[in-house]
Amino acid sequence: MPGSRKESVNSEMTLSHDREDYIAIHSVADALACARKRLNGDDHLKPVIDFTNEYRDLADLCVTTLSAKTRKKIQDTAQLFKKRRGQLPYVVTRHQADSYRFLSWLYVSELGFRLVYNSAAKESVSHSPFVPVENAPMVAQKLYQQGYLSRIFFDRFHQCGSCGSTRLNVREECMTCRSANIEEEEIIHHFNCGWQGPESDYTQKRDLVCPKCNRHLTHYGSDYEKSGLVMHCHDCNDSHSAASVGFLCLDCNFHQDSESMKTITHYNYALNDKGLAYLMKSHDLSADPALPDSENTLQVKQLPLLIQQEIIGLRLGIAPSRNEGIHPFVLMEFSYSKAFELITLLGEKAFTRLRHRLHDNLRAIIREHDLFAQGSICDYLLLKETNKKTVLGEDSAFIERCQHEIDHDLGIIIRAFNPGELSYGE
Ligand SMILES: [Zn+2]
Ligand SMILES: [Zn+2]
Ligand SMILES: [Zn+2]
Image 1: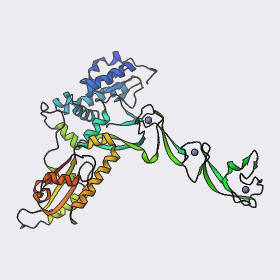
Image 2: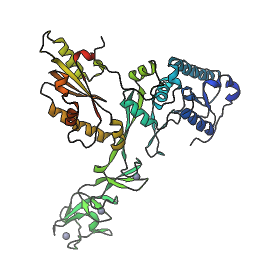
Image 3: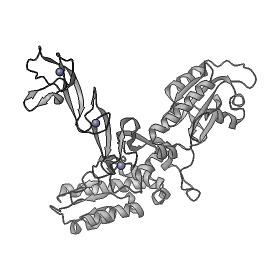
Image 4: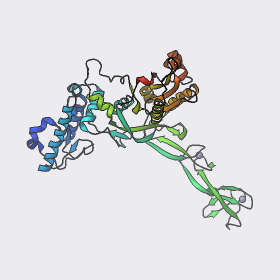
């Protein structure tokens, strides 16, 4: 929690003329009010200017002394926000739906959605308190799934299977009793009786005494040798050739071994071209505040490279006369309407595994010269010398084949395109 106000700046007087254009933070109370305002009000597209030096990386600008130079900086920041607000359609800047608030904030602030490490948080990461939506990571992930944001890997954490915390003690443990009270020891081999065991079993005060035959071991090389290393447990007295890795949750004391650990991946997000185009186009916001499905065309240049190349090759080789109704190719796009739900429920890794199961099913369906490629959000299948009717047949039966032996409904949505229905951006 931010504490001291070191060199508090008396900006009230000096800057009152443009206070309308930014939100000033002079104290913790201001910061809390600002966070609330950004969440609920219409001020989410104004810059947050921190005069306390406590929100350095979280505010849009941090000013600790007032000089002609810093005053100019404040003015420039306010101007920039104003200019960029002005570039957005008015309805977008006023809309209260999370998606619009988040996208327009990303645009105006010119910042991406960024995480920082935070050991005080169960998730071990946090973001600026001035992000204008609640549950920003969820909103960002959803917008990413819809294609409006790009994401950049931040970090991956192991997560407690009981309470979801990432604050874990990762430790080496005894394979028998899971105690961390283990130590690497040398194994002593007593030549005389053949006994082998960890050194601590032989130790009696300053001497080495064989636990089996009770003889003293004095000469290394002729009496005994050290034949290797072992992990010895001081709790159950077992020894193993290696330790295993275990995780103890610091929040709920739940214990897990590495095999059963779930991981969670955190990302930073940035507005991409599609998100920007979406913000800028004219909106009928009375209809539906949720983002609409992407338009009913598919840009070839947005497809995985492998598919792009194949399509370009096929188009060059198209012969003028063909069998009635047969196209040189049909492109199928697979998207997953339950992706967001499943990722939230099972985690990203598990969702990826489900998607791979679907890929296996598709591989069994396609023929040798067909092509499959995975995109970041959708997957694609390029089927040659066919038509949509042959491919899809009974639509529901096809989806059933895709879902074969996959425990969770992926919400598969298939769109199929003839060569003439694709947009080549020419
Ligand atoms: Zn826990
Ligand atoms: Zn043990
Ligand atoms: Zn012995």
